[in-house]
Image (tube, rainbow, N blue to C red):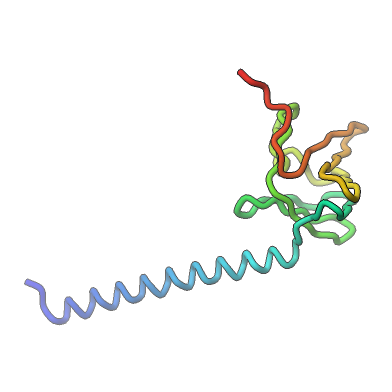
Length: 128
């Protein structure tokens, strides 16, 4: 049998769940906006160079922190000639990167080798 006290308890539990869910989504949005402010999307006409301190992904956006204190982000990019092919998994701390002005290519320098990714593109995918 459902009593008035049981209805009040269920109502309170539902209210708490709704409030917690709202706070979770609100804080997630604030966190995402903070990241976007600190890591502006690199523009085609912008240039970037430096040594990678940290690279990480947040909701499909690749974020970079460089030792020269520059921070930027880009959309996912893949080059299937490399393993791993995802830009965020390929680039490691200590790599040097360079994106020339008026270019969509990001160059990665590691161990006297030069690699590249076309920002926002998936390249060199082999058809099977």
